[in-house]
Amino acid sequence: VVAESQLTPTSTPRKSITAAPTIMYRLAAIFPVLAFCFGLRHCIAFQQIRATTSRCNNLHNNRRCVVPHSAALPHNSNTPLPEGEHSTYLDSVSIGSDSKDESLSSRRDILRRALIGSTLIATTSMQNLNNNRANALDKGSTLGKMPFLMSSEDEKEVKGMPVPSKKLGGLSNKIRAVSKVMDELQRDLMQERWDLVEEYPNQLRSYVPVFTAYTDSAFPTDIPTDKGLRVALRYEVGRFFASLERFRQATNRKAIDEAYIAYSDMSLHFDRYLRVGGLYTFYDDNVTLEPYYAGNENSLVYADPKKDPALVRDLIVLIQGPEKGKTGIVIGLYMDGSDACAVKLDRTKGIREIRVVPRSWAAKRLGEQDPDDVFLLPRSG
Image (tube, one colour):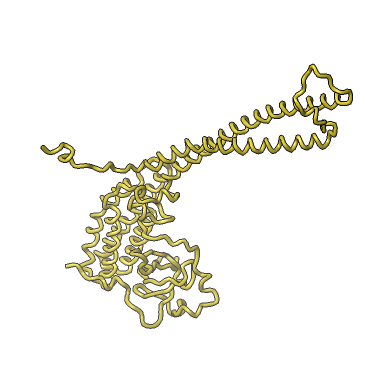
């Protein structure tokens, strides 16, 4: 007969995550008792030293405390004392009574101080324990960054950017996929492939439900910040699709300049949507790059923007402004009298930022340059 214990597989109890807090509570309960005993011991020793010191001071100040050998012996009340020793005996008796009173008061002080000290220590230890438990769930604390308290999505948050809700599924990737569509549209538009350009408006229009779902899901609460972000996102989506409609009309007429302007507006509003929606993969906290080029202007090689201004499709470098030194391509020239141009900066961590700058800031790059990366994209189909 096989024993039942041999048939039943032994299972090792799984350690709970709460083991550490349990040990901390036990230590917090034992620590005040140990502190009380430790404080009581040192207080008693201190009071004994203090009593001995006070007695020595009394003996030094009152010389009549030096009694003969007969006064030090146990005194019998029936035995008369010599006349010269009456005062000495009375002084010794008074000193003894004072020392007894002092020892009683010192013991009371010891107990009172020990109780007060243990109470303060216990209160402080419990408060620190509660603070540690609260900080354990704080994302800024060290314990809050432990693997079992932090999801993989927390690591993907970009500092300085709005933090969307975690319940988005694949909406974020679908929104970022529009960037590739915009790059392909730029390639075909600059090559004036009108047969291919005509297909993009319908393709981009199909993303309307995705934009709507992300706007409502990324910031779903009723707090003022989420409400403001939803309003801003809806505004950028509205401007994006209004520019898309103008692009469709320009494409039907094959008006290349108007198509460039409409495409520039589409790119600008989509870039703002990514930034406001927390979809950027990086955050640039530099206020301005101009100080890095102070006294080193020769490091930038470019044509004079007044004599040879940059046009659409020209590779440029920004020679003024907070983003001085960054490179990109001109995607549109505004004809509204502002003398501004739209620039698509080179790719940084998968993102190509859009900037509208004065034309005097965008100078044509000189020398042999690699083509813009949109022209290196393979055609699908």
